[in-house]
Image (cartoon, rainbow, N blue to C red; front, side, top):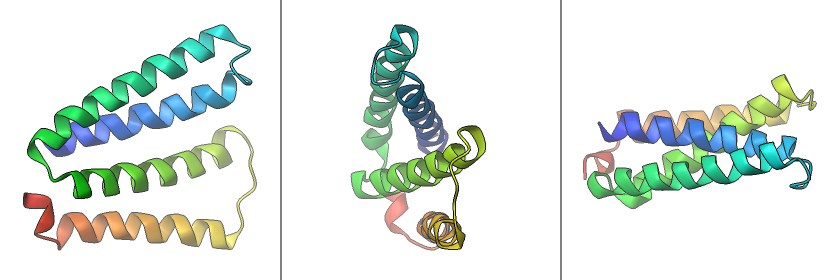
Length: 109
């Protein structure tokens, strides 16, 4: 269950970061409010995750998933240009998350 919650938290954090971009420095109040709501919700979800998952594992997956997701969202939704090294970096981050999930016993608590 904590993996599902963690995935939801990462997705909400990615939405929060996209809303932050769209808020235009908090000048667009709807997006500013959505940013605050999403970040608050994401942190609440993370607080539930760390009840049953080691914080080091949870935060590593959270950060890696968020970085990869926001990077790809920036390219797809905001037209930000990524070079080969950017894609390599995202691939390495995702590889690290896979190794942590599939091979490490640390994720089991």
